[in-house]
Length: 167
Picture 1: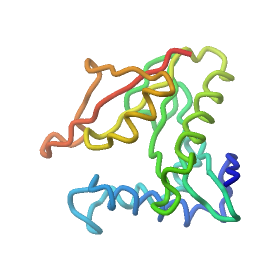
Picture 2: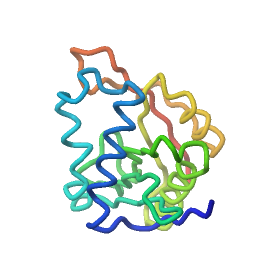
Picture 3: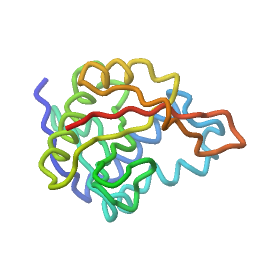
Picture 4: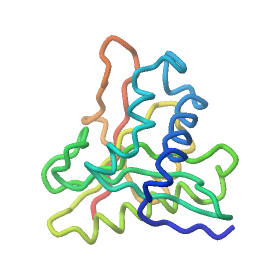
């Protein structure tokens, strides 16, 4: 399958939001199912696109997945420090997994970061259970940074693992 990576268009935001929400729900990354407040954030692609860059993977005429690229100093950054860009909300539709869309999206973010003056590192957070994603990140040269692991919701046990790639 040929996969094209490009900036997401507003007419794709709804599909991207649903793919992202369903990926998080399907992977058990949200504890409360459809009532989880974070689902609104995952579905609000227009909000993300206004504060960061949203890349989409398209193949066979449909949206396969998307990722949010947060440039250094961007308001959507969770863990990025000065000189670092961040990958957020990487999601691939269930039927498109294992076909290279996720890897192509991560590579697009790395290329975008390398093209950003003053950006020296790409960082990301991931859940412990996302083993396929961990393998992808490591295959692309990312390394674990346990000293940066964090928990966005201290009342829940969802500590996030962190990775970095020096550009």
